[in-house]
Image 1: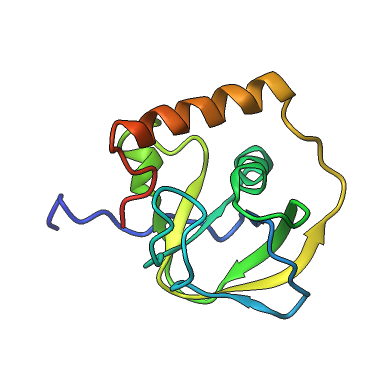
Image 2: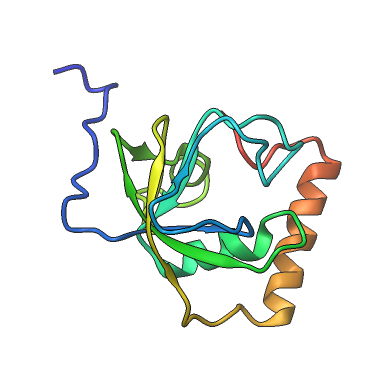
Length: 142
């Protein structure tokens, strides 16, 4: 087997989340191809999901727009892979259980009971993302 090709992660026992400000309903699909919530806002080739509530909270808190922060419980409709934006660069081994897919995510429900990060923690994260942007470093690489 070619060692450069990683097998897909075993995700059969995981519950997945997607953090956003989009107002969606159970049964809706979140599709790739919309403008990204991060970086330059380019059309996203992938749709992102996570198996940790903390990572989904970051997604909701950092999403662009004026809507209410939401965390949806999602089911991928096709193959998923480790999110290289995190696993290859920041957290080897994928402890954040962050993934991406070329296929839509089906909304199964919404998490309504979750806690925001502390304001100073959120400010620090936003300041760091702004620093990276000023340096020309994209947060998301498709």
